[in-house]
Length: 271
Image 1 (tube, rainbow, N blue to C red):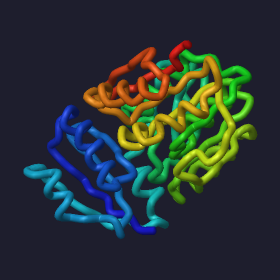
Image 2: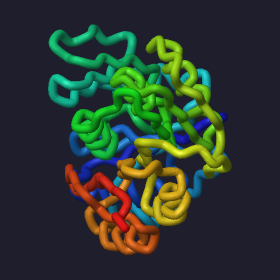
Image 3: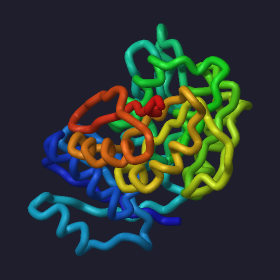
């Protein structure tokens, strides 16, 4: 599959955060954020230039066709390692490991979301530092590169189920899981949870619409005393998420915020 790479220039961080959310709803699947610059990627057969112009309005952009076999070179040109304090480092194989980092994750980034550059992935990793994964069962719903699933295993999870509905993400996650020596992660291509298994920790870094739609399903797959960590949300999305959570016997027990994005911790209401 070929992709269209859009480069948007002269954009400030606050506007960039809102734009990423808007473009995600138009089908854009990968983003790379640089100072006053945003790269966005969409399958060639889904690209609608008129829709893009309507969203960007006065912002300047350029487009480039990226053939599948050229993807790695295109991404590597911009990809930089990400460090969440001294807890976790997310890097490509062509970067040297950083000393003093507790958990080192090596990925082949390709276009799958979840490299850690985006504020939502960063906050998900921050939450994971605060939770105990030892002996826990974990669901990574919308796994992307597989980075959260990989970290969950490294943190001691007894088993991890990683799900995504995108062909490229599944192939990328499979490669990254193997490269990190993981053997407790089951990878499944799906866009919904068609099984009865329950999990101690649910990780869902997707977007508001999917999270609202899947709230009841997520609650049904949570063990008693379990926790849901979700992101892919703008600060203004909290009200809708909180209302839907309440209707499904869940409440927001914690929040993180970064660059206009939020990540939420949800737990079940006690009887």
